[in-house]
Length: 166
Image 1 (tube, rainbow, N blue to C red):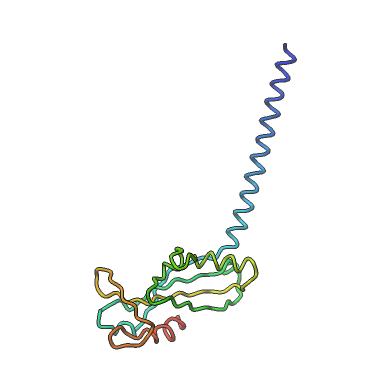
Image 2 (cartoon, one colour):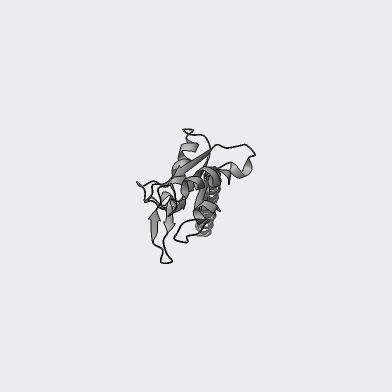
């Protein structure tokens, strides 16, 4: 009877150690994959670009259009220079929609991360600019088609001068 009890106690201890080892291996694997996953992801930042040309619109909209910037995975750990792609959304697309899957189901930062990881494109900075003007305080937005106009302001100059020099 005592041998059986000792054998059962030993088996319970062995099973517990086995489970603990398995749990430890799983935690180590999760940790490794999390680090790899994080290192292969770019970051997206929000910013506003001052523009005197847009300030000249008749609607009184801000002279600081919102932009989003995708920074490649190695941006913060490398001092290399990156090419910059200026992505102009369609006039009826909000900048945020490029990162939410609304536009053709694409999430821009995830697509770029995958293409870079697979070696199909090199790392790059992507700047996405808005193409809309706030008409009033209610949030109504009007597409501006990136043209210079005495009505909507100088959006072509915003892209060609203000945004690129920013």
